[in-house]
Image 1 (cartoon, rainbow, N blue to C red):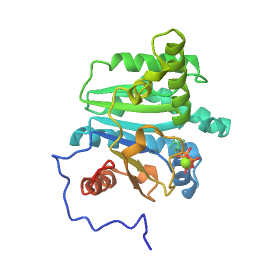
Image 2 (image 1 turned 135 degrees about the horizontal axis):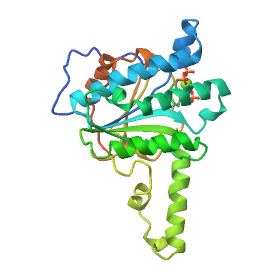
Image 3 (image 1 turned 30 degrees about the vertical axis):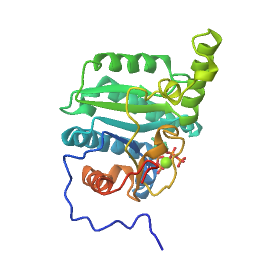
Image 4 (image 1 turned 60 degrees about the vertical axis):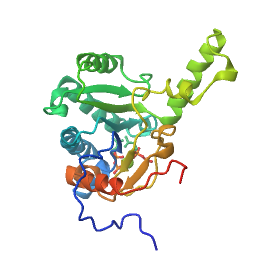
Length: 248
Ligand code: IPE
Ligand code: IPE
Ligand code: MG
């Protein structure tokens, strides 16, 4: 039987001439990581964020140009208030000190998702970080906060509808590009590789439009333990795949 977690024996090294331009990561498993150690779930988020520091450093080191990270989904508000509060507090800490997250990389930070529902003070901080980093061009670090793929598409539809209503667009002429241009990710190419650690085999509302031809990597390692060496394995595997995009 094919086992999705049984990986090929990789003797290959990372091919620096074939680094994916855009890697997206569903940073899952913090809660289980903490539970296994008898710690509160929020402790798992703190260690998960520490791991993110290492992953961003690594992504910049090997020349990934876009890294998109799922931090908080539009569905994560369903969690107990104390966990949501702890997550928001952690986000705020990193916004105040976003250099720590970026290491020595000149990264441009963007927050992808809807600002609706987020505390206005946090929204101000998000804007501040985006503004302060907007001239950086080493890599794009895209933090999906209050992000949902369906919400993103609804938002794009609303924007198109406004343009139709004002006569800017004729409905007959709507193209894929018109939709793409109105997504939170409009500045980046589609993700080449989507990584989900923690053993779950689903997208959980992540990049639903953009994943049409993405390659996937699932791992049963929990996010706080998904260190750069693990990510390297995923990229080496990606480099050996044959992407056909519907061709032959
Ligand atoms: C982190 O992992 C994802 C966030 C929503 C911050 P989880 O908190 O979902 O951890 P598990 O899946 O419960 O282990
Ligand atoms: C997806 O993980 C969201 C983030 C990693 C931020 P979840 O833990 O929320 O997904 P489900 O509930 O297992 O599908
Ligand atoms: Mg989870």
